[in-house]
Length: 191
Length: 191
DNA sequence: ATTTCATGCAAGTATGTACTTGCATGAATG
DNA sequence: CATTCATGCAAGTACATACTTGCATGAAAT
Image (cartoon, rainbow over all chains, first blue to last red; front, side, top):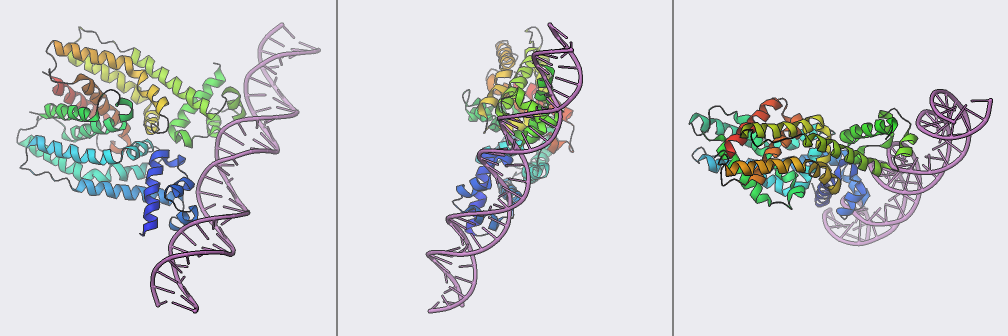
């Protein structure tokens, strides 16, 4: 992986995020990377391989961020939930357009999107769910709560907040939205 | 609006939802409508006008569904929330692929998406928020709850559940997810 | 100094897509 | 019977895009 192919990959991420998979052109990606279009094809067999590499790279980057999540059993419930929300929001915030566009590509590219949205966050999600289950045993969490769907409902709130941001930013700040999500979830899962 | 243009519009809705705005071709739309491609251009000036008409039609259809929402002040809190969730889910459920794809187009078509996702649900959303505010005055809802963001967080959970469905359907049924969303929200807003 | 190598550039091919034109046809309408 | 009108069909235009080829160039390595 040399410098030029890095430039191209990063440009491709931006252009795919902005224009969509079908809308992104190799010409525009090359232009953005300040590289000749031919050079793009010297490094990447075709547009499809470039797409695969883009997704692979972002999946990896997401994975790294999620890997940072450490849910210490000693920490109290609220701190753990906050840690999960923070790590989740950091990925969404840094990749807002990309996430929005590629969720929209789910019908067209189910496998790529699965790796992007599921595989990369799987370890953190599992840890969080396990933590909630443990907390449930310690009676910190309602016994009749389905922790798996609850964990996903929580990330769902946050995800929707980011995806719909351009539609809501005239109404309230995203911080306030996230705060409400946290409150709702705390109250919602408490025993 | 005669029969043929109806057929074309409905086919366009399907194809746009499936292939995205850039990926959809007039040829494929005509084929789906079992109509000659030339006929398509006789009814719609160009692909862009067809897109506008598609969005207008869906916005309208969404509006009609949301207009059915009647939140009687006498009904108790849970029934009102359930009514809101039901009307919201009916739109999402009937238009799953369309909603997913067009949320992904938000960067490229902000105005169209605004009418689709905001304007059409505005009255129902306002009514729901007003109801929550009233309930808050009657001490049925926590006083420190920001009802606007809470209402959106609620629809956000549901929206995310539908959008991510292809990624989660191996794990749990969407019904169970929705049930958890309702529980979380009830507990989360209660005084 | 010579070679290697990465890149740029000009040009070209093949294909697909939006959109047009002209004409044929058949059903309905007067 | 004559006319109108909606549609189909064949063909074509203009343009954009993915991808290729051949050559020039300049910097770095040997």
